[in-house]
Image 1 (tube, rainbow over the protein chains, first blue to last red):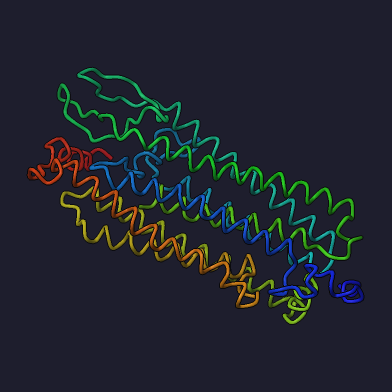
Image 2: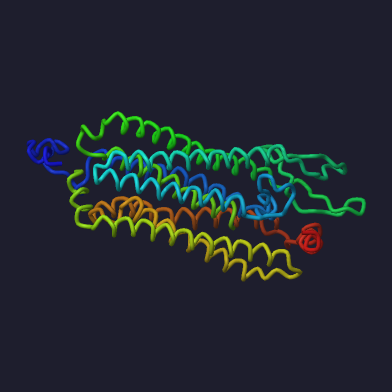
Length: 245
Length: 143
């Protein structure tokens, strides 16, 4: 702000000039997110490699076709689109909070941060329901000539190709890697959402305590916002790799 | 510094900035709805008697392109990377180009691995197991 220009310029990055015209913290947040992108990229590419090496894979339209309170209705993609829209919407509320921060409007920042936190919690709730449904929902599988009931876990995949058994169609075990990759990658993403919610709650408390108002700028909200948008960005790719293709 | 960001925000009128955010929200929503439509089309094609694999592959390619478009809007508008200095944008984007090689190389390798297993390293012809043919046809009536 105006106070910064009064300070000796050598303070900026100690080199006298801020490269790229951004603060140290913001640039480092960008580089952290870039490294995080490589971590997620490595996970997703590893998943792709294993999937390409298999003759069969679990069909997402059969695995993810349930919706809360809808019983056994076949609704492919419905629940995951709800989760996607929740996350997109919470990204919008976050960018609105950043925008209010630019205007030094403390009340506005608080309002939009609360909505963002609620969006994050809603997403986590959806994910908890989805995981529970997959792990506890049992399906008949033909294993070594006998029928067994399997949930979808990291050790069991009941979504293999179907065969005729005693005149009835029964699934066979699918590639075991499916559960590990699904729970591993969506879990790692969910953990990012969770830490994003925690960071946003801390930001909300600091905003209420007028920390940023007294500091003269709301740049911390911008940095938290970068992290939150990144979580949304990763979900776009998780959505593509696990649910759409 | 933050004064740069404030000056940047000062350039835009408050209303236009908010409009831009909501416009991006609608773009993202519409792309997502198109993606869902394509996803459901793939589902319907797979349920049919003779799934057109080439069409499915093209749809999947289209969904990948739409996803990249969504990523562009999130990064450039929501994360304000589009408003930063060009050199900073490059330090973020250029390293990510490594992904092009990663994706091609690793998916290629996965596919090669499958072919090796199916043909005992090229020593025999690959015969599709009969059980794989069964589900697609019969299931169509059930759902």
